[in-house]
Length: 244
Image 1 (cartoon, rainbow, N blue to C red):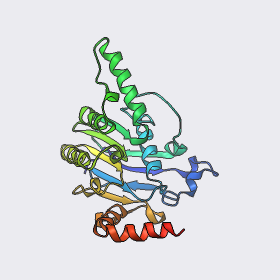
Image 2 (image 1 turned 45 degrees about the horizontal axis):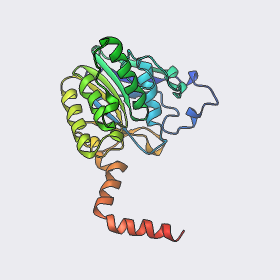
Image 3 (image 1 turned 90 degrees about the horizontal axis):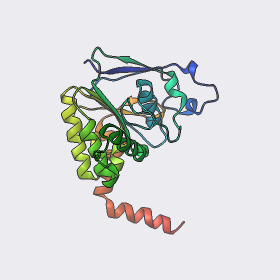
């Protein structure tokens, strides 16, 4: 399968000896990570290294660290790690026609720049004002405006802005575009998005990166356990908290 990004390699010689990156169990020692499907999800607990690797991948590809297209050039706060300097990408024969790096934590800054760029290109014409929409609505507006077939899309926890219904909308968009030649690499905790048929799920839990079945992810298991045993679990959890 000719993916835009077929694999990533990490040259640890380019990461300083005292870097905190060397202490992230799932990443330490990883030299190469291959992608086999048009849609790949990074899953795992907070702090397991998912977003760190995704960000490095995005910056190495040429995206702005805070998000946007490869044409976006701005910095509100430089928080990205040095890992991007150690990451190299093995690309496929096809070249992506479009691309977007979308991350929940810095989307406000991207939306602001989106409006500024629109004003610059449209002159006196009224640009589409993302800040006049809800967070979720503006998030989906960017997806529907910028995401096209034949593109590379890197998403960091997109469900953070979306209701369950809108997560289903995003799932449909990802499925449709992937079938039309797009590639997605996504960090997510959403049991809805992770259920996308045919997606590759890579877990960062347990101190190593490995493939995992949908039903074996914590996102699925914890959600299923809560829904099926809500009263019992809440009783145990809240009762124990009252006795602390």
